[in-house]
Image (cartoon, rainbow, N blue to C red):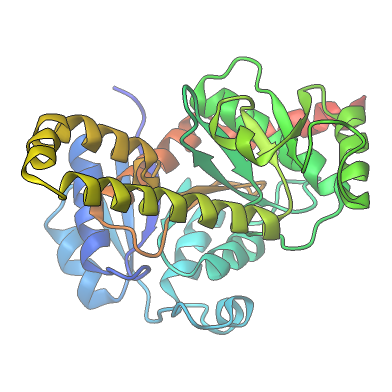
Length: 333
């Protein structure tokens, strides 16, 4: 039997907390016998739940960080919040990973301040798997670092390549730089400097990636600054939702198309699942000493269960350890 992986879960985070988080934990435990969960949250919520579920331990936390609070200030002020407590469990070694659908900013702050950065990593990066046609693409950074230096993007590329190799089974990940053209001389001064440093320091660098390349499988990893990455991510999410609204309108427009909708309902559901962020459960924060995944604020039970499972897979693949080792190899060259 495989070794148990312990994941700390913020039960109080997200728009649908705590009900969705508890149901998500229940699903994750039922689907994977090798996962153990420490449920972090208000004692009246987590203690009764843990008492009735095997492989689940309650970790009471007396405070909750709201979505509209200043992230760094809240993390420093609310040291007994479910997010900070969960990250502290990783730092102390009681848990190997952490998942939350709460405030993204607070999760990033707590992971950086409490769990800590891997030695040599200048800035941790938040990644998101995009459902490319034929194969997925990891986009990072998608919000952890609004302002970046070119050397940050080199490390983003290195970490992204490790993630795709360890978690997604890509033998030789191809890394691209998000830009306005594929030619090396295209883009802003920042983009030109990034291109030069990526080409010089990253063996996996495959050149510039245009916006259309994000979903066509041309690259395995695409790096950019967190401001641009966040805009791109939300544009893709919005376009996907709008597309399905149009498709629904077409299918509901007449008796004939309604019959057609019934015939392809299962196929459309499969396509929708491929495009849904719930499938991947959360965005990995790469560059910290542990497996930290941040779910969407609107995450339901399915997304949370998938996020817990992905956090466990990240632990089992030793992504943080491989990033540290790879960074050491790069520095030694």
